Image 1: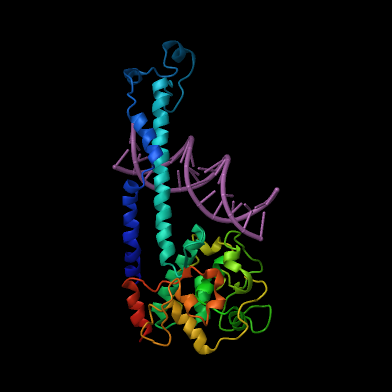
Image 2: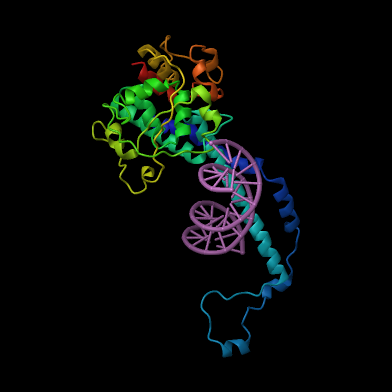
Length: 333
DNA sequence: TAGGCCATCTGGTCCT
DNA sequence: AGGACCAGATGGCCTA
């Protein structure tokens, strides 16, 4: 399934190649055209090498390394041209990278047109998403919605966590109540997560779009230290101890702050309802749970719209291509 | 104003 | 020689 998930993204990545042709920077083009027309003179073919004169070679010991060529005007010009071409290539390369990142943003659980996740947050969320899906397949059952959000939000900044939780329509109070039944320790009996004592805030994502007024979702997530416990109930967790494991470096998250949002505790069915909205593509055969709200459905849903003002254009992916049908079938079994 | 994020330029390294 | 990739530097934009 995961391979099919990747194959979904792969074409997008491959399409990036075409971007080069479609998005050639006009001004760079013209610059280059101007330089292409520049004919390099014959003089540069037999340029004298710096310090190559007999007198110099006799007086000074030979220097190691490539001999420096005298920078004639033609050589300087050609060097500039080379640099400009390199700059153009680099720019295109970075644009490709950003396009791929945009495509990735569209397939991770939470997508907002107006408030994009930062690059690093996108990568973190994507990683968590893949791990979560893998864990779901490995365990053969749906995780609890709280666990699901926790898994998705590991290592994410507070604003991103808020966004994801908002996308999931997760009730803040309920989440925290479950997560920290005995007060400020924020330690779930069912969760072996440890809690980091400090928080990481992303200024951009902590904008009102993410945390506006009553809808800010304040969740306390956990450091990576409890990863194995969550992802490997059967001891089959990936090796998170590898040196390159991002959890070592990513800012630990501790989401705190005042609670707001809905005052009512959602019922179990309510929670499942929210949960399955995220899985709507996965559980569409459940009439009471499937909800196609896309970018507007969340608002039209009415019952939950008051909980998601900052995420008005954020949506989950219910119109996903075939790879998600696997999970759909899975969650309907 | 500080800090985060980003785009771009640039020089270095590696490979063909 | 030239292209791909990378990382550092820099400046702009935005938000708290």
